[in-house]
Image (cartoon, rainbow, N blue to C red):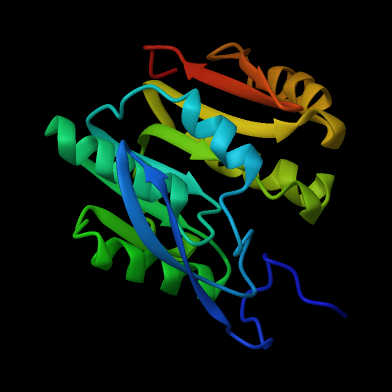
Amino acid sequence: MSEHYFTETPSSDAKQRELSLELGGHDVTVTTVAGTFSPTRLDLGTSVLLRHLPPPAPGDLLDLGCGWGPIALDAALAAKDAEVDVTVWALDVNSRSLEATAANAKRLGLDSIRAVTAEQIPDDLRFTAIRSNPPIRVGKEILHDLLGTWVPRLAPGGRADLVVSKNLGADSLHRWLTQTLGGAFSVTRTGSSKGYRVLTIHRGESSD
């Protein structure tokens, strides 16, 4: 079976490359590695998401499916500039993704990023923000389980932003989220560009 970016321990050649790009308002150079999501460039969907995000709010931010780290790095850079106290939890199942994210964070002097597996996130932790270019290609059942596990861990008043290709089911995912999350959450489309939708989920201020 061929490997995917959601393989836990890739066995393919771990070829590295450097990318120069803008993240968090900074021109940066990062290292990517083969066997992770979009190792040759900043994925178009991720680029669309980053352009539609608000400044980070204080608290804990989850990058769900971090890859080599662009969403986490963008958030940490923006928070550092704004002097906002944010801990960024960069979550992935892929060991190379976690290693690359941690290495890029160190390279950029960002000590607010924690590259982790699900088991390393405290069970009682609630997030002020969740940001994700979710792994649509894992299949609908696994995707729904992933989002159904983490989105409800938004803190009251918290916000999640997801980017999904229209051709890969953004509108049907919008409907599923609305039907599944319940009345404490609202789901709206807050952006649309280059064939991608940005879906924003707000959790009400009530803790119910």
